[in-house]
Length: 333
Ligand SMILES: [Mn+2]
Image 1 (cartoon, protein in one colour):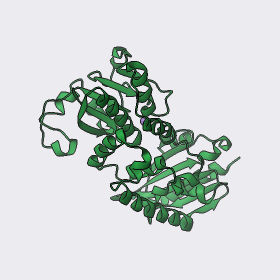
Image 2 (cartoon, helix red, strand yellow):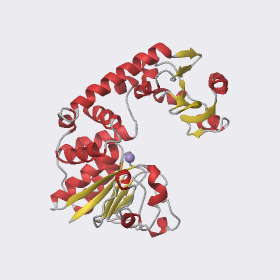
Image 3 (tube, rainbow, N blue to C red):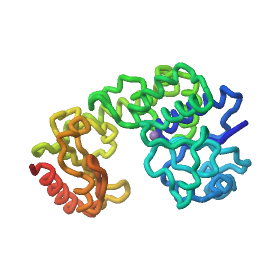
């Protein structure tokens, strides 16, 4: 039996698909089509006939990865529910995107939802072992353990995200670096089904990618070192000269571990007068944060969660004024 697999386009989605593939291969089955997907397809996804329709050739075939072949039964991992699925495993909040779908969902060994799992990879692994008595290859235990760390962004320190020593962190950085390369996504799923993370990061496919990642992170750290302005417990970084520096996202906390917040801003690509402001709380000092950043950003037309938020502001002068207001609020006792 052959399946088409639809997986969230990140490390967890790919690792979940790899676990699924190892299971299928162990019973003589295989995957015909690999389809990495992002949340921007949700408006099409909520169509009951999504899987049939995407097989109809259209002018946008190349963009959406449609083919004219008949669809195989669909496997969905690390992505919202669809009733026409042979297998579905997810751990995200709000997995039912259409009225009535939640009522239709009946958990069984092929379909399981559990938001207490830190990674979908771990949920797939446990579900297939428990439901089918599957004996996973030994190397997958390490994959699952690390996805719980990576998908929950549960890093020990900012230093760990900059130095990138652990194979799982290197793998994640390489995947994020070429996220839109669909051939790389399929290759990763197939490779991780029967290789360790150690082998993955030392493979001839990934080594050159990692060399580019390291250069980009080093230049990002250097940029932050030269551009962070400190005000009280807040770091301010104008990323306008080099928005790509944000690949070293946790660099501000690596450079100044005592700081509690970072406010970054840069113009949108192609829209030089529209600015994005991002405010974050130091993940390794969360207990010291008494402010709700998402609520703060609402005042500026944005939103977010307790520890991170964003807003879009028109014009550089308005942006600088908003940044000053935010910094003032974050420094207030
Ligand atoms: Mn996930």
